[in-house]
Image 1 (cartoon, rainbow, N blue to C red):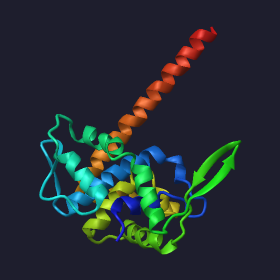
Image 2 (spheres, rainbow, N blue to C red):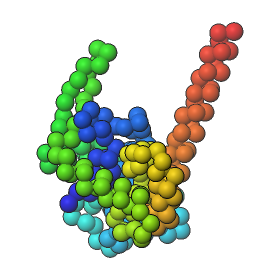
Image 3 (cartoon, rainbow, N blue to C red):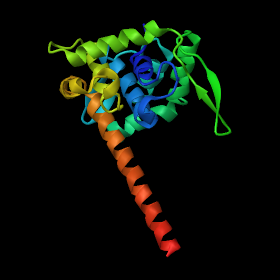
Length: 222
């Protein structure tokens, strides 16, 4: 069975082009860290307590989950958003770790392309069933009205801040209901609001940086 983080990564890739949909790689990267914590929470290996993620029980066998568990077991003054931000660097790069794992499982490929004189690596999906299964699961959950299975709830909750609404609800007419279901899933998944907060802070910082750059350019040009 794939990790939740691997499933989320597959949902975030165009299966043919091998690129991140909507150009939302940074948002997806935060979502992937959230998926690791969400998976640990599902097996009782992490809890949200006092505004922090706290490791509980023993570490899972999967190396990436075990590494994340150890990280959350370390004494820290960081609040949950700071803990979430730290994961990517602490595990040596979430994107390459997850992509390499999916390549080893023959789920993804690795294809270098030339774009405007630069080499860009694409990751097309080689095993469609590996992506289709979680995709159909979250689409059914997003379109339905019944209760949500725990694992699917985590995945659905993380598609929202990862900017994957048009993936889980390709028909525009269905997106309002899908948003409601994502909100419902987020209420069942403590890590999802933290992911949303980190992404919002990241976007605010980027917007502030762009404003400063534009102001500086206008001042020096004047």
